[in-house]
Length: 389
Image 1 (cartoon, helix red, strand yellow):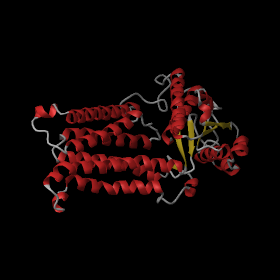
Image 2 (image 1 turned 45 degrees about the vertical axis):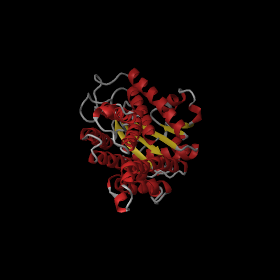
Image 3 (image 1 turned 90 degrees about the horizontal axis):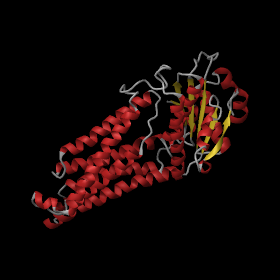
Image 4 (image 1 turned 120 degrees about the vertical axis):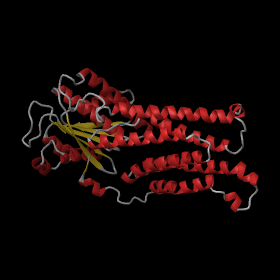
């Protein structure tokens, strides 16, 4: 992943309302921990009954308030068009800090066995490592709904475990007879199952990246590559995901295509209801069209060529600005049979992604016949849109 000169025009101020809320959420985590663990009722001279019955409930209420701000900062960032790289980094980190702190508190109080926390933390380390490896190779691994449900169930389980601590259960038999105790463990077990499932989902998607599967379509030979019908089916599935995700976030999409010749736009418009989010695209197969309709500078084309990071970036910007979309994707590359005068071999593809916040470009090296390279390019472009959404 490479930044473009346009990044210099992206919002330099990270002190947006959404980022301030994210930082505040992190700063409130010690407050939650202190409310849960510290003997503050004794410091205030409150009755022992208050400490036993209300301390955990107050801590649970603080946890709920902190968790609710996760939705708020995301909403503000999107509605105010203030999505920043800082926010993308800090927002998921804030969630992990909060959940980890809560789980450690429950272990410290003896309400949760250590193995539960180890499973959850192991998943976070593994997934973070996989995503880092994928990013270093220019591969996008789209998050699934399983991961989102995992987070929701983890937070609900933590609240239930905190609330049930507000009274004593007694013997183990009495514990199983208590509805809240049983319900808390059911939710926690569901959260653990989703935690493991989401980890497996990431590992399956990244099996080629981490060496657990056969080489991917971008690096394998023709004999081991998926056939074109399989690639097209994958592209069609991703197109549905793009349209659904864009509808959920109320964001408009545009495309700028060179080697794919409108294939990405065709895939998107084949999805029913795509007109609600897909505004259109420019098929800029020649340099003259790139310059005239996407504002790609002639100097860029002469100095770097059509298949370059600079061209992909300007194509993406040009499509977004001229069409009036929130997100635009550009693709420019060589599907064969020959390379170009700049030394790029067949299969070299640059994919650009432009938003109001920044524009970035990714390079790919695909193998296969002409149709296979075009399909692989479409898949990579659709995955990039999903990741941006």
